[in-house]
Image (tube, rainbow, N blue to C red):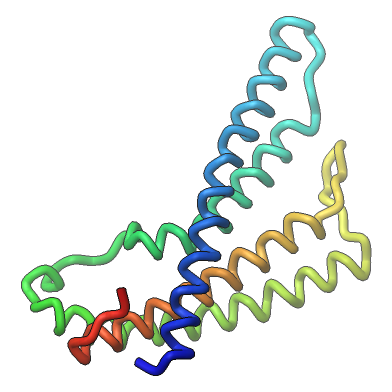
Length: 170
């Protein structure tokens, strides 16, 4: 593979590694929010109206920012009827072919995410609840997560092409 492609793959892998490791700590923030809400309701008798939505936002950020890291670790579920019976080279060819559909899907998803984020920012969109938080922060995180997943998918495509040619990118 040409040097710029190898550099792109290594850069995207490094970026998504660090973002994915950061996303893991969002789970601790989620646990803290839920613990606070529980203690506030049970001990003090004061329910917190923002805890459910905040936990939904944190969980969304967790899986959206961690998705590319999961792909990097080959942690996504795949249908495995015949795949394991194929040689590594044939697996790489099949992966390189099928990932084109994932890239198309992510491009469409990214376009929708950008449009939705622009709308939320322009119209100061709020959630319909008693807390009524602004939605643009989670939509920005959503769009960044989709973009990182797209970058990781393209990097994986290049890795699969290299493996199919018999010269894997390490």
